[in-house]
Image 1 (tube, one colour):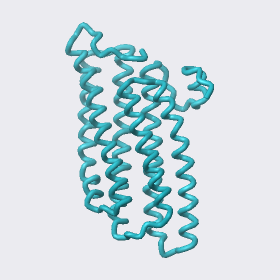
Image 2 (cartoon, helix red, strand yellow):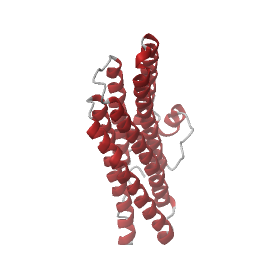
Image 3 (cartoon, helix red, strand yellow):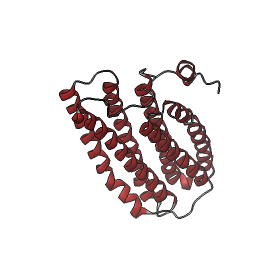
Image 4 (cartoon, one colour):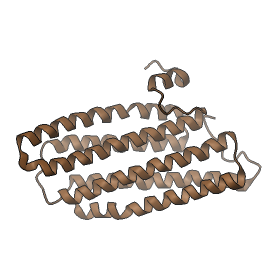
Length: 240
């Protein structure tokens, strides 16, 4: 099932139901991507107005999650899907949960951007923060692309990249701790930056989860809590 055919059922309505939920997930993913991007712009450019917009738009993400969840419930009740169709529905339900949580993390960053906007001084550690943000946006975008194309190999490759975010987050955390020790007047704002960094690290984790759902959908195996090494050996035979 490397490439799912959404038009294979004899029932046109069933085909349309499956295509609709897939498209709604991609719509929700696009909105969440925008939220993360705007939150980072607000943070790095001291744009409190944009930060407020990110906060306000979180209700749209939540509404889409509810809408998609209801559509999945209707499919299960009306169609009683089996095999790959049931995997699709279950993968969608799990994916939108992680997308909603990514939206929550973007909302937190937007809120903190408002708090930090009054301080136009940008210490060196903001460069590290920007790098973590770029990495988080990249892994999220790649995870959504893997979902859109049902590409298990791309999902696996993207999941591996989460380790880079973890490493950069740890580096930034050490820098921030050092900065607080050197200048205790900056503790409040440095803590706010640290919370932003933690949110970005969690966005990477949630994006990795989405990649695992894509592998589950395509390969038919739940790979949560399985090491990347074992996943590679079992499904991809990739020496890297």
